[in-house]
Length: 70
Ligand SMILES: [Zn+2]
Image 1 (tube, protein in one colour):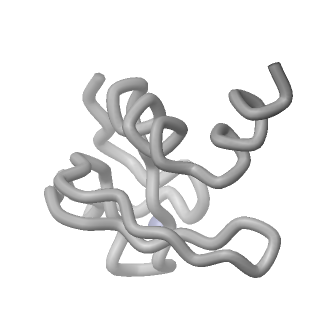
Image 2 (tube, rainbow, N blue to C red; image 1 turned 135 degrees about the vertical axis):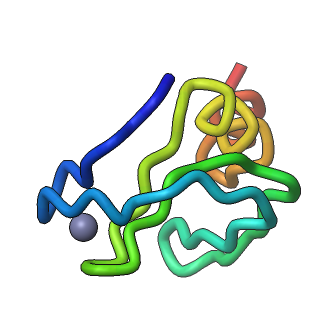
């Protein structure tokens, strides 16, 4: 997946970065290590591709809850 323009503000300054991402779900914070995503310096928008979403779901409290419900 390649993104050339920010979907939120239309800036072409958006660029691919890689690193740990901190997220929050229902007040619970968790960190996803080594994720590749696009970050826009203009508006702060972040765009995650499919692989990044898979990684985030794997460590997300929401996903854990789904597993426990089985
Ligand atoms: Zn933007």
